[in-house]
Length: 210
Image (cartoon, rainbow, N blue to C red; front, side):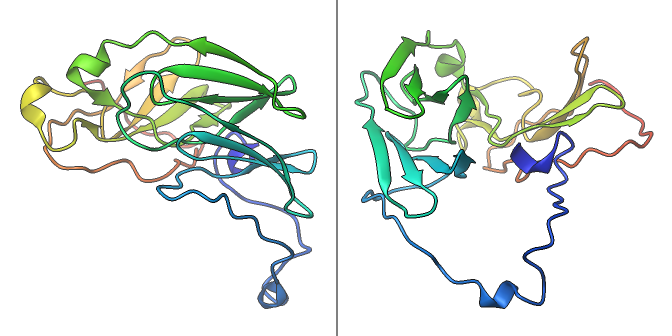
């Protein structure tokens, strides 16, 4: 599971690697994707295979030998906002990823065979919006889902996104059942994303809506 649990605390109880032996770690193998550009994804490992993405590529890599099990390349069919991808999700034997031009892929985790679905272009393409760049955290005791939201887009031109730009550059707290929203608003013309995943704590705090 991402972040070692629903709370996003990233704590691991494993003790095989510790402060005494961490300096002895050495690379076992390396795999180069052969692509230039941004690399904004964290590898996801399942059943001994690492799944990673680039802007257009999806790769399945043997975690022991670094052998390329398979790879898939998307060919854009429409406009793209930028050259990034945030990784895959795994479910039902499928490797699921999206693309910048609105295509959703469900690739066979073992053999690369794919299904694809085109996603309708959202209205936010016309006036901008705030992106959720990282994964969420859930406090199951209180039923609160914490969603970090990045800067509104376009980044540096706030004239074409009038209004309060609600819920951007914020950590949005959602009632996991009723979807009540607690956040703040901003209309900044700078690029300031919420940088990291929140860690959920069961502690009483005072929240009010804007």
